[in-house]
Image 1 (cartoon, one colour):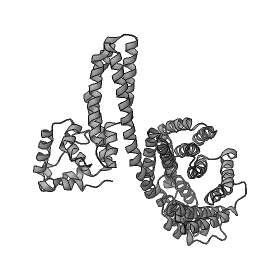
Image 2 (cartoon, rainbow, N blue to C red):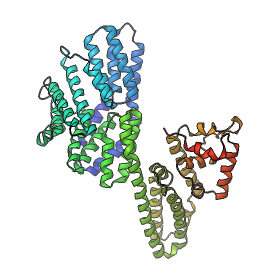
Image 3 (tube, rainbow, N blue to C red):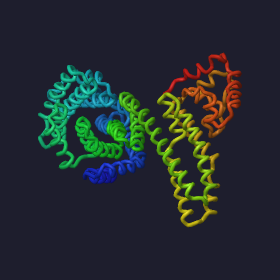
Image 4 (spheres, rainbow, N blue to C red):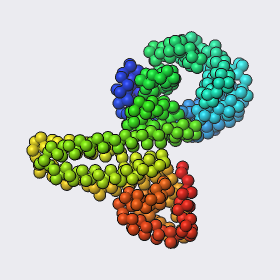
Amino acid sequence: MKVWFLMGWMLLTTVAMAAPSDSLLTRLNKTIDRKEEYTKTKLTRLEELHQQLNRTPTRDDETRFHLLQEISEEYKAFIYDSAFINIQKLQRLAYKMNDPVRISYARVKLGFILLSSGMFKETIDTLSRMRVQGLPDSIRVDYYAILARTYYDLGDFDRDGYYTQRYTALGNKYVDSAKALCRPTDYNFVYLSGLKNLKNENTREALANLNQLLNEYKLTPHQLAVTASTLSYFYISRNEPDQAIHLLAQAAIADIISATKETAAMSSLAEQLYNRGDLMNAYTFIQQAMDDAIFYGARQRKVQVGSILPVIAAAKVHNVDEQRRRWLIYSTALTVLAILVIVFAVVIYKQLEKLKRTEKALLEANTIKEEYIGYYFNINSEYLGKIEAFKKAVEMKLITKKLEDIKFIVNNINVKKEREELYFSFDKVFLKLFPDFITVFNSYFKEEDRIVLKEGQLMNTELRIFALIRMGIHDTEKIAKILDYSINTIYNYKARVKSKSIVPNEKFEQKIMEIQTV
């Protein structure tokens, strides 16, 4: 763990040296590639702690409390449910030990978990019942800091001229109480000063505080993420996206390295990149933000990310289609100039036209969710990579006049395999959105008429037809084009399925539309 932390800190120190935003985004994408490694390290550490706790005798309250402290600390920004459960265990043990200090410590930690999940009222209810006089300064600092953040967050959430002002005043009060217990050189003192100045629009002081932390302090990955993310909101509010993107990229890298799942940096970064027109990175990062929100289990964060993810996905689909159109124009021009490869160019052009018609049929749907699925089904970065690699290979063979090699390259295109991969991708994404679809679908039939999938199958043709209908594609011609069947074949499939159902034919598709998403 020490080696892992040292490597992470060295990487973050390098990141913090004001590298250009594009370089940071490249570094962030490379860090995302190692995300599972950092998560696995966190899980391994938790497993070790749980094993130690299981081996500790139940009568050894002191050791068990210390281990539960460590476990709760590891979980607090990692998995909400596990953090909540272990904090409750910590509370029960503190009451068993009849130790007021430990009871207060556990309650403060519970407040942090509730706030991280967006449960403002529960946070205030939990902490307002506490009496902090006489408690150690470390507990009191956390207590006041959590309440300060709660009221600041409430003000940001409400965005109301009257209540936001009241919440900011309360946040200021608790920040001052926390700072009074810290030394002026402490991280908490400087950070809370910057946060208060930021909330009260004391621009110069806020920048001085937060930049002091970034430039002069040896921060942990989590401290760097919190500080950089906080400072980014200043630049967002001033409509200075380049500085905000730079800071949010630093924060996102730090969150990944520390396996922090409860974070807003990645989604804020995606939104800023979307506004700047960098749709490829914006889509990658908003997906990561949603994965983290689901992993952590924060309802508020899932709602926040879910509100922008479809918008970015739809824009990316449109952008990729524009790129493909531009490439087709270039490909056509190259075909005209390269007479020697006209036959092969025509084959390529027809293949692309066929794919474009299929993609266009999906993109014509009028719901964001359909566009989201359409993107996964028709347009992905792997396809662009294959086309670009194919173009480069053809150009190279033209330069070297190896025409027979071009024929080999063209003949090596496996359209059937590409189509199967598209179907598999659609099935996987659809079942992620509608995990109960097959179970509910089968409930509309008698036992002997229910669909039993083969090993390795996600869905078959019948299920896929009605999955498309559930996504809002009711036009049989569109469904036929997507699945590469004739219209009559689709009609036959639908009629055969409906005839076996226990649901009346005229109500069958209505029942399909009632199947719920996650």
